[in-house]
Length: 214
Image (tube, rainbow, N blue to C red; front, side, top):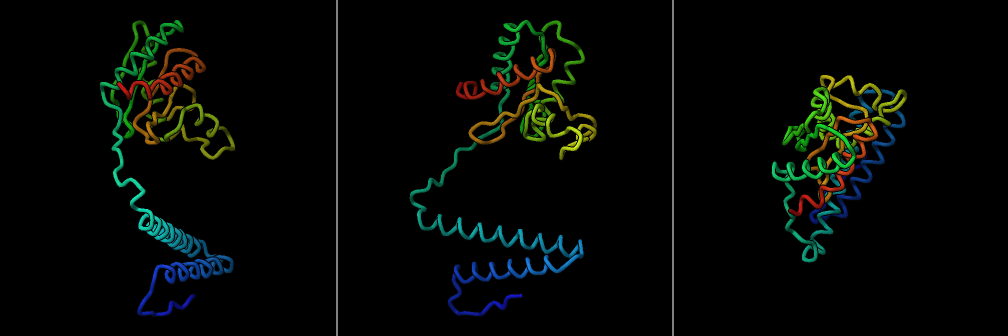
């Protein structure tokens, strides 16, 4: 293991160099060790060292060019009830143009319902499906179409639909709602074919930017 020299004027550069030495020592131990628990702990230590180095770099950069970096960040909140209803209205108009009768669910980023709307004569079964599509996209921060590809046999999320009390949906119609890079909610649409539900949900996702400006 590296010996950290004690210096009266121990600066960030010295600390960063010693952290590099520590990482090298950890890598050497990982190469020689075949103990699963030890290796797991070493990897965790290495991760924390890398995290500390990243924070050091960010701190230095911020101090050097701080006056040119905005310190105020706009607070991005979850989609509101008013915005959710406005989005649902736009999706319903599109659904009518497509000759569809659907259920539309808008959830928060915490996978909680904000607004759910059933068009006249929509399928009763579509209510739960739309909810679960919105839940899935909020909980996993991805579309249910993307999840469908990742949950096929042999893929990394195979079998995920059997978790979360059966609320995970792995077919199209669910879309996460991102605004300025932040997840603010999710959308679920059910009532048509998988392709129709997907297209309508994608339409809603693309309409979000416009709705958020209202």
